[in-house]
Each structure stands twice: as C-alpha cells, then as structure tokens.
Amino acid sequence: HGSNYIFLQNKTGIWDLTISPEDGVPSRYTVEVEPGPAVSWQVSPSSVSTMRVASGDAIDLLVVASDVGGNFFTTDVEWNLEYGVGSIKNGSSGNGSYIFTPSKSAILGTIPIAFNTSYGVQFISIELVAGPAAQIQIIFNDGSEGSQGQSLDFEIIAQDSNGNPVDFEFSEVDVSCTCGEVISLDTREYRVELEFEGTRHSLSVRQDGFPVSVVYVDVSATMFGGMLGNNKQVISIGIVVLGGTLLFIALAIFKRSKKAEGDEFEEIPPIPRFAPPVSAFTQPPPLATVQPVPVGVVSPHVVQATAPPVVATLGNAMDLLSPTVDSTSGIETEPASLSNAMDLLGGADEAVLEPIIEEESQEEIKEEVKEVELIASESGPMTTSGVVLRALPGTVAGEGGWYHGIDGKPLHWEKPQ
Image 1: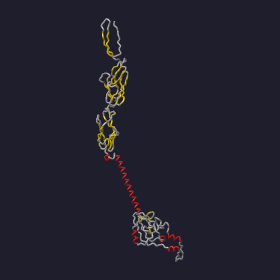
Image 2: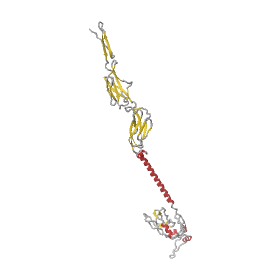
Image 3: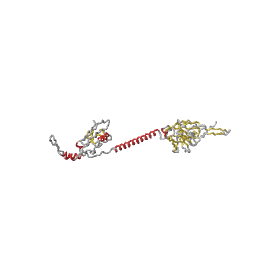
Image 4: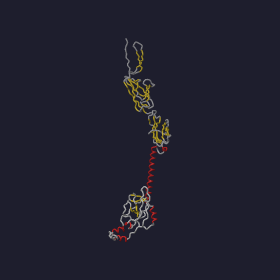
C-alpha cells in the first residue's frame, strides 16, 4: 500500500522534491511551478521610467500579468488603437514585448490606448510630447502673394520632425529674399519689401544645425514700379493731384476775371453834372432822332448836330410872369406864377443836370456822336460799355424820348419796336 502526498506552492519556478523511504533508497524529483490564470495586468515602459514618447520617436512597452498568488509573468494581449493615433508591433524581447510608434498626425497630449483581457478591456495612457527641433518653418501673416510697393510680414518657427512647433532660440539666423529687402521686426518676426515683380521669388532662412527652409513669393507688377504703392494707392494719389490742379486753375481764372472786371469799371469816367439851361424845360432842342437798330445786330446810333440851346435869362423869366395877350383874338392867357418861373430857373431836384458847353462846330459833334453805340435796355438806352443814359424831365426811363447824352447834350432816342 502506498502513501499520498500533496505539494502546494504559490511561487512559480522549479522545485526539487526528494523522497526518502524508511527502508529504501531515496528518490529525487524536479517540479516546475507555472503561474496561474492572470487576474491583473500592468503595462510599463521597458527602457524609460515614464510613459512618455516624443513625436517622431517610439517607446518600448512590456505587459506583465499576475495570478491569484501574486506571481507576475509576461503575457501577450490584443491592442485596440483609434485611427490616426499610431501603431503597435511586437518587440524583440518575447512575450509581452511591444513597440508603440505615434503617427505624424497625432495631437500632442495624452493618448489613450485599449487592450483586451480575460477580464475585459483595460486602458493605458501615453503622453505624446513634441520632439527636438528638426526644421524651420516660414509662416506668412497674410499669404505669400502681393503687389509691388507692398510688404509681407512673416514669422519663422522651429518644428520637430512631425511638424509640431517647439521652442528654440534662433541665433545668427540668415533671412533673404530675391524680391526685395528683408527687415527684422523681432527675434522671429520679419518683413519683406516687394520691390521686384515676378513669380516664385525665393525666400530662404538659414540657421546652423537645420536644413535650409525655402518658400516662394509671387509679386504682381504695379504702376510706377510700386514707388507710389499699389495700383489703388497710385489711382488715389492721381485723383488727389488732378483735383488739386483743376482747383488751382479754376482759382487762377476766377482771380483773373475779377481783376479784368475791376479794371473795366475803373476806366468808366464819372458823368459831370452841371446846371441845366432854362430852355431844357421849355422845349427840347431840335436834335435829330437816333435811328432804331435791331437788338440782334447792334450798330451805333448817329446823332446829328443840333442848334445851340437857348440860355435862360432873368428877362425870359419875367416874360413868363407877365400875362400874354393873343393879338388876334384879344383873349388873355393865364398868367404864369412866380413858382413856375422859379421852377424853370432852378429845375426839379430829381432832374439830371445838363452841362453848359460852348458852341461846337457841327462837324466835331458828328465825329463824337459816331463813336457812341446804344443798346436798348429796361432803364433806357445803354452804351456798349454798360453806361445807362438818364432820362430828362418829361421822359419815362426806358421809353422813347430825351436823354442826357454822353457828350453832355440832350439826346433824343426812339425805343426799338
């Protein structure tokens, strides 16, 4: 009859068992204890201390499970990755060894990764950070196209191999462009002047330790080669200059016309005023009438010579005071009053005085009168120089009758029909 024994061990490994019977030869056995079913899992980096990976790099992962006895062992799992996060492949260290590589489009920050177990889905988190500066990127504020006379502002930044921006202190950076001068605004900000028109002008940035970064700029041609700005600015300047020129010309013409008008009025001499003869109020002198001229074609009115006016005397006034008797009928006319005689001697206040002149020859009067041209107006006859003749007493201004002539003598004028 034999004996039964039970070997219990919670630790994995190889164990040596020796059986020594009382009356027999001892025997030795080797027992290997394997882990039990996994009840927990742990994923950790195999080469670094933190679950962090830089963009463009990879991280080695190790999956370790444990059984109910607390025995740890590496094990394989099934991974579930979202699209665009990255990829996982088996590592070179056997079971539970994996390599995770983030994709270029992965967003910096925490990346959740899932894997399947016998107890369901488990999650781990890997922090994705920017990698070391590997290239220089040129970023324009308002595009890489412009016109002559304009300028383009841009910024230079450092990026890792996946294009993520990283902090970098630029030193002795060389920025140049084939379309014009480049001006430094700040450590990373620049401005290029668009001086030469053309397409695909190269804008390059050089920094030690980085490959040369090149972009292309298109410059469209403008009027005057961009010296006055773009086309809109040139048109605006042209409008302002043209408006100023026209205004200057208009002011010059206006001042010149005002000066000419003032000189014309200065040339008109004042009309002399003299005491009128008494005969001017008794009866008009027998002057020849001026022939009417049509308004459309103005021609000078010729005034013929007249007999010299009769000078009023005190005797004439006394004759007016005494009654007059008609020799044929014997009827006595109404005597003139003293006031009438004084009115004849003095004349009305509003009457235009006629100059007392000496007798001139008929030929001289004709020569002066021929030079007078009269035009009909609402106030009476008017000379071509704008002087309106004044109506003598008994004549309505603007109507036909006797007017004070330019030569100082009464002038009979017929209003054109």
